[in-house]
Length: 256
Ligand SMILES: NC(=O)c1ccc[n+]([C@@H]2O[C@H](COP(=O)([O-])OP(=O)(O)OC[C@H]3O[C@@H](n4cnc5c(N)ncnc54)[C@H](O)[C@@H]3O)[C@@H](O)[C@H]2O)c1
Image (tube, rainbow, N blue to C red; front, side):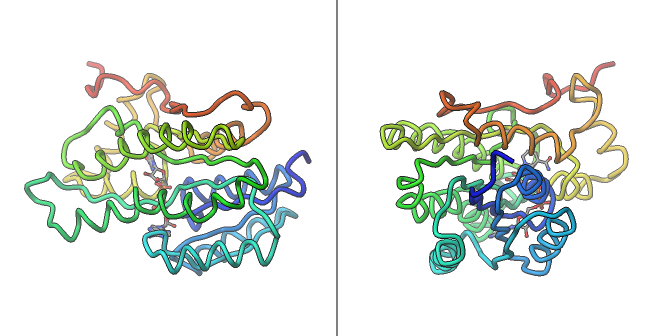
């Protein structure tokens, strides 16, 4: 139980990879703040944490809204007095080309995916300084391998990689480590949304598996294990890194 007495805040943990991270950190012994703009989903994650004997608190938070993020920080500090790890995981994915993306869609996606990382990191930083804590950001292989019809999303994931390195450089001397994870296709909400946007979702899912050397898409739990590693003392000299968890994502073409 080396995570006992540690507080971990995970955004977008009402489902998918965020939920898997919440369950894994709680199983390891941490107290988890499950933050999501879908409060019933966050409450469901906490119910699962409690079923497993862990500790968690569901908090409504919209990471794109400064007032809402300030409320998340206040609730966390009031309830637990500190934060040790922030996992910036919340994101949305608009499956369109630049030509088809409206200004509103562009701005909304930037505000959640990049603005959310900025806001949550900024407002939790004073407390991370005190705990000499760390941040794990959820980027994607789409930060460097792009795919058709998700231009804005790919841009946000590349921005998160840049922001991760920038924050690592700026705050390393304060004892704060900042890393990001670049998952390949993972069996969770955003990938499912992408499959559903294709003409033949079942075929799209099959084809996606074959883009990975392991010939399958990943599980959310496989990403969660890397998040725990990056947040732990085992990764004490790891900062500014982009950790690839992609089952050997290939050239973008399925093998013949
Ligand atoms: N699923 C994949 O294949 C995949 C691959 C690479 C990276 N990722 C990244 O992993 C993360 C999670 O993806 P997922 O597939 O588990 O998604 P998901 O849709 O299953 O979960 C995302 C969660 O974020 C919440 N959310 C959305 N906007 C929010 C906001 N403004 N404020 C607070 N919460 C908000 C949603 O309510 C939802 O619970 C994302 O950062 C995504 O880019 C996913």
